[in-house]
Length: 578
Image (cartoon, rainbow, N blue to C red; front, side, top):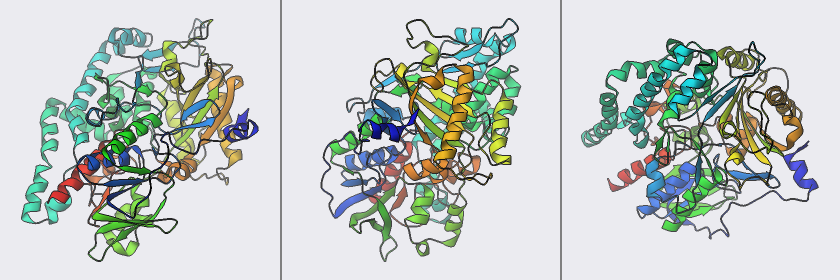
């Protein structure tokens, strides 16, 4: 088996160096507003600013737009969603207001949605699995294999999480309470800041009797909450993976339950909690947003890395400087950053422009990441012992799911976590989330072949075994992951055509994700809502007037939502009107 790059070279194939858009427009020296970074949030912000009549440019460092929501053909004929890989949280209003379907967005809904095969056979020698989807009766039948009691109570659990998610979901679509202006603003600013409290008050009212359950989700370990509901490990561990996905924590960590809500707050095609694969890969989401923004008149440019943000003598953000020395001015003193808080405030700004207290807060944002993403090209579908393939090798319902491996017991997740945290080495039995988007999307792999994405953890950014992440250690870890998959699906390793391995340092270098953190910062209680990215400035603003944070480092955080971009544009436009 060859690496993606070696395979491409041997076949004389040139890796794609452009986004799906054609020739780039000319770069001008002045725009009303400038957006640093062409991730999906930056593109959303550009679209809304341009709709409001603000002449906006997006400057993307890489050769392709989308940030972590990108499609790249790293192996000839196979299109990888290299970082983000499934869609659910993209706000319905953004889809409709930016007419993303008209601009090419097409999503294949998944149902069922979750498949957990068990590695060990039962007493009769049969391999069991847990398959969950939208059919509640079928879910109960599946769960009853392990616990009749859990099967009976599962609908109540789903309804409780659904009610909580529905109550707080509107908070995603509004900027958080403006504590800075509420505390230190003028009388008029304080009155306006109080108005931003309405969505929070409405959420509290909507929670009603579920308020205590919501507080428990925010503060308690996911395992503590799940233990109150259920007794069977395959069910509890499957649900617990949603609580720790992308986070350097264990289901036993206080506050780990919050991310469970992200998996009920999503919506696709009017179906609550639905997840799906985007036709053409996740880059098609970014392309659709970009087309919408450009149709309005926005300029979107690639290979334009920004080296610094300029601030005028009045303390206002007034432009940027590119790495080649080109200066671009903002005529409205409006600059937005889709980069992480660390890159925005510590790398692109001179430190003497920011208060020491603010710099201290920003420097202590938690970016720890457990994730290594492996994208794999295969020439046949994985064949699981717990659910064998049919003779025609056609995709079965479980192939369309998120497939949880090494997740049939919560203790396995805990052990994998402690390998990375206590010993500073990659997990011996990594937690693996496998997806096969080509099981629904025929456009991303050759006929009969498939794209497999592996979202794996736990892998520390800094290893404590005296080794660095290089080609040798990357491939050692990927081989370990493949060995684990082979135990569940014999023949997987022999089906591999090529692979693309992204450790935490690779995710940082490739996509600008500080620490390799896919959320632009941990989604912990101390880094949510008005405390995202820091408690003193959680309203997309910062001490520099006219500089706004529009990426996932701002509220409401990570995931392909677009909400941070839209909310930042709303805040900036409100400031402009004032």
